[in-house]
Amino acid sequence: MSSNAHFASDIKVVTLDADQVTARLDQFANMLHACVHDGASIGFIEPFPISEAVTFWRDKTIPALMGGKRVLFAALDGDRVVGTVQLDYDTMPNQVHRGDISKLMVRPDCRRRGIARLLMSAAEKRARELGRTLLTLDTRTGDSAEVLYTSLGFETTGIIPDFARDPDSEKLSGTTVMYKRIIR
Image (cartoon, rainbow, N blue to C red; front, side, top):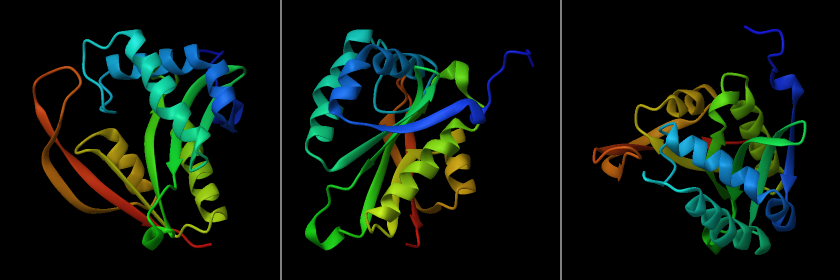
């Protein structure tokens, strides 16, 4: 390992509002673009131009943040965005105890440093502060993310076969639906 390697202790996890994400739009777009081109199954398929990554953040994420029912956590290495996860708590009245985790991603050149764990910990803490007692998510069956979520206490409730196309082929993969009960 090189002497200039950075570890999770060098990473700061912060929440960013819509204006702050807009100010860093290029960093978020570049991170998403790199993750998809590295094979991450986060909703996009190749070819995936950087313009589509910009559109996702500008047209999907930023408006949701402005609505006040989603929190975006960013992992910063200095001033560089190296990871993110979102907590969506815009639920129906009979589900105010629940939150959804989405779009966990870490730049490919920053993985294996504990960043995803830091992000998930921050999201769980915020969910608890919001009075949420159940977190849900889904992930491509067999991905390393499935192992990560299991190690964080998420349990599998089921697998939906042929749920989504892989980002770099016509292959359809299943999705594993997971949940975690959290205590206030």
